[in-house]
Amino acid sequence: MKKSVYILLLSIVFTSCKKWLDINENPSSPNSTVPAPEQRLPPIIAQFADGYESAGTRVAFLAQQLAVTYANNNNWNLTRWYSNVSSANWPWQSWYVNTAVNIQPLIEASEKVGAYHYIGAAKIMKAWGFGYLADFYGMLPYDEFDIPGNLTPRFDDGAYVQGKVIALLDEAIADLQKSQEITAPDLAEGDILNGGKVENWIRLAYGLKARFLNHLTKKADYNPQAVLDALASAPQSDEQSSIMQYVDEEGVADNSKAALQYVNIGSTGRITKLYYDYLSNNYTGAPTGNNNMEDPRMDLLIPRMENREGQLVRTQFVDMSSDLPKAGPSSYNYSASSDRFSNKDSVYVQLRMDPAKPQAGQRILSTGSWYTQRGGKGLLLTNAEMRFIEAEVRLRLGQSAEALTAYKAGIRSHMSIMGITPTVIEQFLSSSSVIQNAGDLTMSHIMIQKYIALSYSPEVWCDLRRMNYCTDASGSYNETVGIYKGFKRPSHVFIEAYPSPTDWPRRFAVPSYEINFNIEQVRKANPNAESPTYLNEPVWWDQP
Image (tube, rainbow, N blue to C red; front, side, top):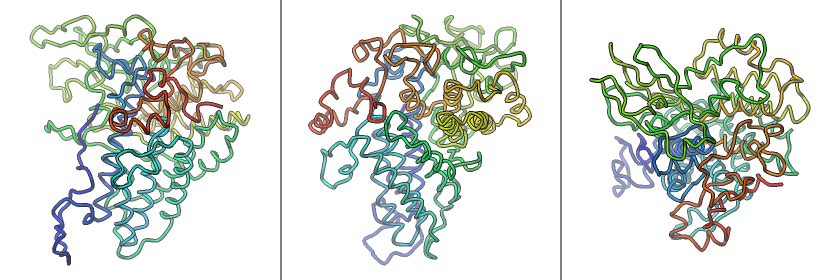
């Protein structure tokens, strides 16, 4: 799932006509001292997005949003909840090798010219990267990760890392609120995420605080008011969201500017029955009534294929608790000359649009998915997510009317970001397919809608773990009290890691780089790290 990134690593791609006094510094040659802040920030954002969304792709397979055509490879293993050291590598490498090591040089270059907004952005990127990876892996090197000459850095627990992350976000907010020096480049010159909008970066920092603080729902010191306070300064509109816009370059074979999910999911991803059931309100306790309406996101998220009669029909869905994922579905080929597919599993339609740009008379093999458009969007932190966090917190506080308003606002925001017309959105929000009475709203309704709105995001797995999937207090599957109705253990579960029916995925494997070259520090941090059952050990916030 690794992809090429359109801006080269290490913040070194630039040209300059500036005359440098130090004749030993060639402004056209890669090094760690010459690039200006506006040249350093873009590759940091791009590399972060690569790792972050690649982690999200992995989560989509683990979280049963996506199935995959059968092959004994990393993606298939992820659908059985097996994150081996190979599948664990790329988010780690993308962060440590391509991103994190470049953040302090950006801060130092920015300090020289009084570019406080770049310093703030750099601190946000550092907090974000370490924060989400600590949630993903449970432990990682923080304090010692960039000490020169130290090839075996100590691992820090996620709880310690979160404390550092929250402090960094507060520092970033203070830096972004400063006026830059006259010598500083405008943030817009290097900001490929928020277009130079300082306010959006400040709101991003508060949004991340709300996200990280809300992970603590199982802890005694969980503070719902602190989450609400952060939300008050987080994104309040879609325009204030941090969304990565990718590029579809017509006629260019290179995918380096294409959407991460277009590249990562490729032609092997398939839609699960659970994902479709959530979109179609086909689960225990789902909203229903005399005024039901199909979710207007359906045909944007669920691929269709043209049959031989010229009708577009939706894909079949992979039931992860059935026997199908053990050895299927199979991949398939299409012959235009015979107008036939190579096997019957063509009913499980791929998520990439095919043909990419249909010509007259061509059969549509897939309409694709909104998330896998070549020039799609990466929803890194959105108003929709903030509203669902608010809905959850309000419901916990017994504020059901406010929770209902936030729940609907989250649905509205996600649909708006996807480009659905306001009239259609409001029709759906007024239908019986959406909860209308505050007393009827449950945590399950909120979290299932958030699951849809955060498709292919690492945050989905944080929520699944916090809410204990669809289990009761014993860890057993229980649709009566469980939150994610219908989320069952896959039929081909990696039994070595999950020997008991009460075992569920709780953390990703330690990447092979650390197992091979830093094993002593790994064992010091967790003696069980090399065992398959390490994968079902809760991270720090996933336990009382």
